[in-house]
Length: 304
Ligand SMILES: Cc1cc2nc3c(=O)[nH]c(=O)nc-3n(C[C@H](O)[C@H](O)[C@H](O)COP(=O)(O)OP(=O)(O)OC[C@H]3O[C@@H](n4cnc5c(N)ncnc54)[C@H](O)[C@@H]3O)c2cc1C
Image 1 (cartoon, protein in one colour):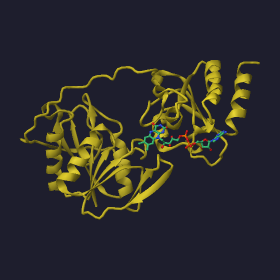
Image 2 (cartoon, rainbow, N blue to C red):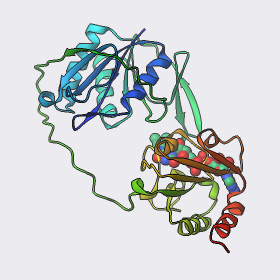
Image 3 (cartoon, rainbow, N blue to C red):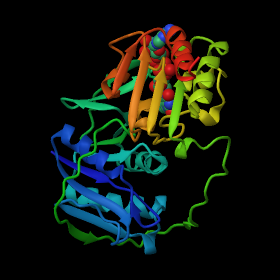
Image 4 (cartoon, helix red, strand yellow):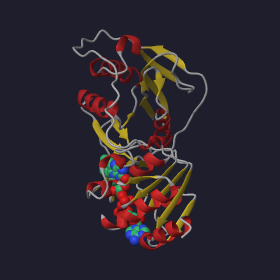
């Protein structure tokens, strides 16, 4: 079994998420080769063949040129799997590869068990298992779903070239317009999950945040319900945070939420279900009704 991993770089730096691809490859129990459009200053530590497309010539992103070079690698290496992150790069490029080769693509994989791909469905409230029947499979993996592995060692670089024609020119990056609050630098964040129950109940979250000088975050269902504004959503489709203290209130711990909180220093979860998955990543799990526990905690901290 062989896996071709498609790494990514931004402005000359290898994205750390590259190492999650190695985590997925380990689950596939497959030998790996790597493709990267990048520069020699931002290369992964990995003992194996690294197919390097010079980003100064081919851009950090160009769907026509990168697709052509990845197809060259596939022809040479004949991998069983081609694995992308489910990033904007992977979402755009993976289907181009699958369609060119007329092979199956499985998107947003969260786990791999004995060659079966696990995906979420019904807004991540259920899982489904998928197998493919084509000779090769293209995968995109959900960011944060696979534990990163840093293989280490010295790679063997194979410089890639293409004379494919493109009408696309990589112009560069533009920072997104700041929208709402930036939680990235907050030291204390208290988040509301669906377990909070109603919009009115979110007041207990705001009260605690005010008392401890923290900020308020939310899981996606809370934002979808309009209880807390979208710019405070935390997770794979929200903000990525790194507070010293994160307090998750009535949040189950879905992979998409965990992807946004994995850099938190100390995690406290309040959940009435002691088996909730958030307990596995928390330093402290308080098994309680959030509507009883939070007002009492706030009162105590306020010294009332
Ligand atoms: C493509 C995609 C992207 C997504 N992006 C994000 C994202 O960026 N961020 C995100 O958060 N989600 C995201 N999701 C949704 C995610 O999969 C989960 O559905 C979501 O995180 C669940 O939110 P929750 O934990 O608040 O709700 P639930 O999963 O419903 O959990 C509620 C929890 O509250 C507990 N509870 C209930 N009542 C109480 C009470 N009174 N006191 C204490 N505990 C209580 C329950 O035991 C439960 O554990 C995404 C999903 C998809 C498919």
